[in-house]
Length: 111
Image 1 (cartoon, one colour):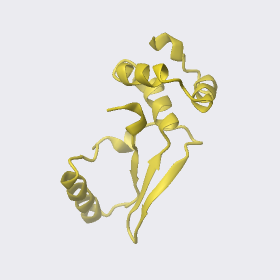
Image 2 (cartoon, rainbow, N blue to C red):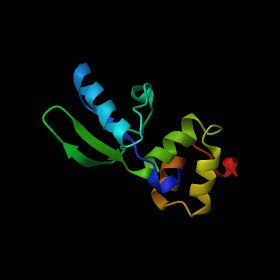
Image 3 (cartoon, helix red, strand yellow):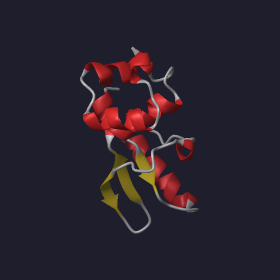
């Protein structure tokens, strides 16, 4: 998946299993799946999200790509190496470089 298409969809449904199942069904129609370990994903505290859906029980938000890339570089660099190299080759944003420095992530080590 191209790095600029990385989306982190945050689901705020609390303990509403029915809403989660409905969301999974919606994702399936789009050829996507809800990561069962999504709640374990580490994201920096200052992650910026863009609201894409605001319903009664569900709020859909997409994390800005720089924060997702930082998360992948910090927590699973080997698994995400190809994606991270693609992002770095395209020219990392100043925000990503600043985040990497703040969170002690050596982006050059990935190359």
